[in-house]
Image 1 (cartoon, rainbow, N blue to C red):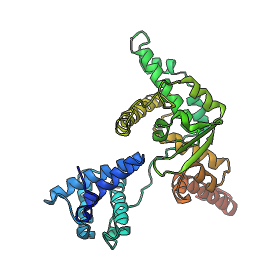
Image 2 (spheres, one colour):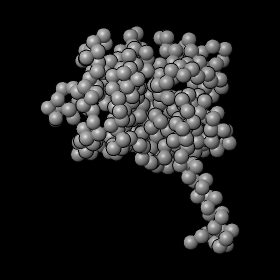
Image 3 (cartoon, one colour):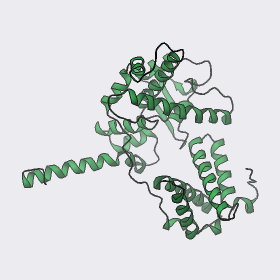
Length: 330
């Protein structure tokens, strides 16, 4: 796909504008957000093709069309949160275009752009400790892997690195995998890890504690990158390496989940959510947690902690009813 940023008649069409925006974000190293827009571009493009259209001017983006798109997504078996993800990205692009004077109005009022409650992603500090101390070799044998096979040692090394990566992200205040992958040795200065979040561009500084330093020293690299995840020289090549790496990482975390006594689905997001939850239980103010995680606002942080707030309310209600009825309130 090619766009001509200087041609207003071209960029006033939503798919062309979205493509231009994604390219700009990608060049600025905001890879996650660029990928979100690219995924939405592909989805909305497929929908428009069912309507006999290749692209549309912003003036044709109506509430009726967006409702049709939402219904089309659901007919494809897309879940509500995923359809909301696409529509939120479209809304974001629409708002960007409005700021540039390319469109007006709000046709998104009639479609769902919320986030439905999903399964809790955080795990307890005790489980984090269990993961840190996990005997991966015995765990592999326990799930049926033969230590005499040639691939066993390689699998052991890769899973050990995935485990250490997970722990490092937790120790680094919920560092995201994309930010971890793109860390370079130059990001370390006087025992401080200083980097810009690829999603928001915010500068984050984290003290390198012993648990983090041990992991850094365990995986020396011959490249500018801090960890042996990326090797590419160009941004585009590095991005493709990252996409491959995160898929592999999540598969490895799933294997680690099988080794744990509890049925806990580990993913690349779990360490981040778990740090926020643990910090909250340590009575660290939400404003501090928000700052530590590089969120634009406390509203984003509260979405991480929403289930915790609900649990506190339930606990308070049980105590209240016990006081009134001298039982569990049933």
